[in-house]
Amino acid sequence: MVPRTGHFVELREMLYPKEKRRYQINEQTSAHFQQQLRLIHSAALSYTIPLHAKSFMDVCRMSPLAWHQQPLLQDLLQSTGQQPLDRITVDVEVLVGEKKQA
Image (cartoon, rainbow, N blue to C red; front, top):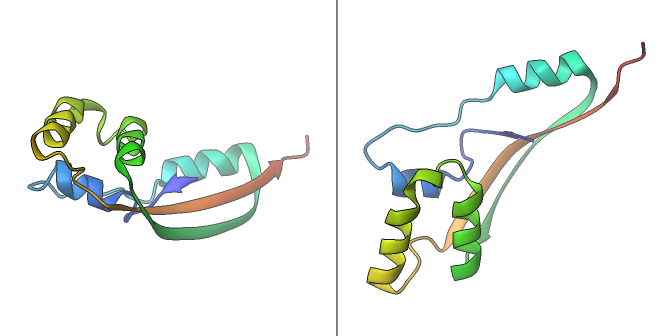
């Protein structure tokens, strides 16, 4: 899976409101994939899921966007008693391949 422009957009806008942080379609990742494997299929997948307190922190822990923002996130949760986001968008390109014949 390769992140696309809308991936975790809510988190990006919350953590970096003054910056235009965007995922670019990662052509290097796609190119590397196709060097190693024969691309059989690719599909864009985009959906929004609700976040609860535990899932919000899980998303923050797994996203490089938030790795250096953990103290800020903890402060937000403690000061407001609520999580800052109630939903998050997943926007990825799914690549399916098979091993190239030697």
